[in-house]
Length: 579
Ligand code: GLY
Image 1 (cartoon, rainbow, N blue to C red):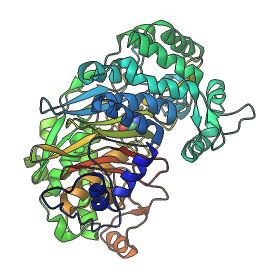
Image 2 (cartoon, rainbow, N blue to C red):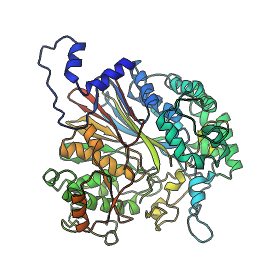
Image 3 (cartoon, protein in one colour):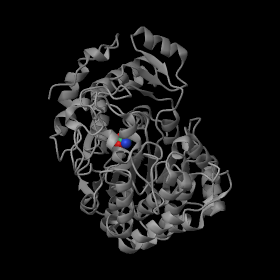
């Protein structure tokens, strides 16, 4: 396997010689691919998994090699990340999985977003002064929504996988039971949250040693409780998690910590299939995540607005380009604050928001020579969260299936509360509701009444697993973590490829910008020229050069008979596994 991996990486640099060494000379001349770029994708032919962590990506690749399809590999990777990438891989969270099913030439979306417990009410996180109690909203048992991940992965497996659930879960169980060597990335991820993890006795026991130290790089890290929980699921399916002994342990912890999740909430949880949202940008079709995520709608809305400009003529990351991009982002995020919520509770005007005529009216509001202050922008007639944490991976198989999956505990390590005896962290996804509708949240985001807390409702998300089709075929699949940054990260990765002809590694690596309407701040990554920033400031933009990175995409481009993978280099540990 190691040799193959080396060859795959090497392929990016010497595609033709390696291909010729492996196969007899083709009758037709092998076309020479001119990368013309500082950043090169990793290349494979048959199957690929691109994700935030190497062991889990390789688990997915092993499933592909063993004859599984992309769904089998995605489910295997999802369970493996719960073991090897605990900051965001999870059993206790939720997410969205976008699938392209080659046989049926059809796309579908599995919504396994958490739901609010039935007992949750509108003012759950308000204190006696009417202000949001941040400790309760983010780090208490009440911040946990009813987990959706296990139901979502099982639904995907049962409907669209080809291998038995126990087979695709076996590698995750082995990883948890036998352990693995702690990587630099895992060491750093735990270190960054060690103080908070230490506040919960079970999380402390799981992630720190008896002296409260972070596991050392290279030390073996085993998770027997998590192996037990995974085994319950592998043996008993959905009931093995939502009923029975695992559920009993979750409920005991809820009782101990005054949480709201009940036995009925767990037993009643259902992942659901939804129609993805669709739009176009020039000759490309965009297929993405519908409500209760805001992501797909706003990616399409922003693309619709930008379609009216000649972006290539402006130049990538020029002041003119960033200005128009930013103005379109502000308009979209203003709409997000009013219209977006769980569609099972609130009507969401999907068709109107993604309509080209609406985009034309919005485009007319953009002034080419002046940034419109956010206070002058209102939701159109017809939020954000901070960079929480979440993770994304993308899978493609040799049958033509593609899976783009984003899932999360919300913050890195969720609420930092672990359920004793399960090895599992609780999410703090309830914080994605509008805790105080109409008021800015602690990150300056304004969230609307439509996203108020209600029992059984799914909190509004920004998760945006997305695919771009060209000539009716999947061409690009991507997604990102980062709360509200997800939408703009996915948008810019796709735009870089579609409007600026970048290969997927370059499209992923180029510096990103972000504006979310409120607060009125244009956040830019390092790497945009100071001259450009000066021009943007002169236009009236409140430019803030971020001390951190924006998003972390995991992408596959399917082009000219190859799979081109790119794991975002913004954080350590990402991996492209292909064969
Ligand atoms: N928890 C981040 C999101 O769903 O957007």
